[in-house]
Image 1 (cartoon, rainbow, N blue to C red):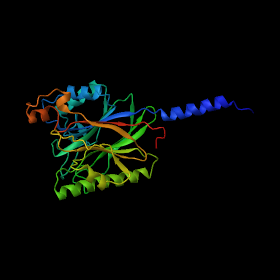
Image 2: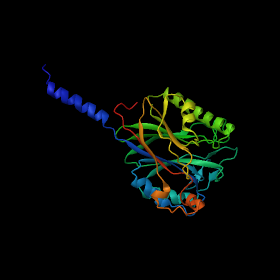
Image 3: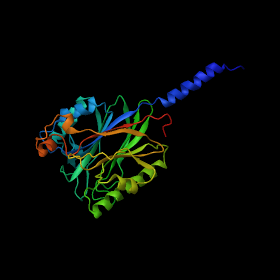
Image 4: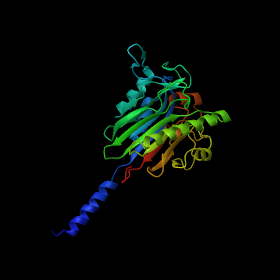
Length: 303
């Protein structure tokens, strides 16, 4: 049987093209200080920023309460918060679906209390681009955990064109003192250990650690994290409100994942805020962090 070489070559080119044509995923992370504690939050402004910035998925930290009642058991319900609901409504109005952690997590023994002592993790995503595959906490004990101040939460998504990835949203221990620093990097090492335990069980290799890492020194971050991981914030850009500390970071396994276009979105410039606006008002309307944007690059050899 004679093979038409031209057709065979065209078929091979088509396969290679399709394999390399996975679309990028545009992502964001935003620590919104005590979301649920401010009645003047610019919910529509933040939602418009994310939608107009063409973010496919947004990871938010510091949600102090659920938007609606959440039943932990038949005997226990956590009341929804109207200010949180207003933010969630603004995001869904922009076409986002969301997945919320099943309960809150915090540093002390007491959780389920709708206060700044605990927080919920949430990811908003465009369902026409991404499908949620799985989600959950990295540990069963969500209060006063031995390894985490706030137990991180993972979200596994699959893009409709084939790219899949697991993002782990974090809010690590703050402060510069040695005890806090050591605790923070113990948290990161625990996350890395969890990643490797999962990677050994499944073909998934696109693991991304994202969120408020309370980093004060990017060099120390690079030294303390496993050598297989890369830092997306290559310029060590600052992301706290005063632009003095590089709190918000993205880490990824460099041999399997590519992240680019990391950037900090300046709230003052975006919303044309005069420098005379009191800091407390800016925090109440937006946050004490600037959001970060980044791109998860589509790969022709996913995993």
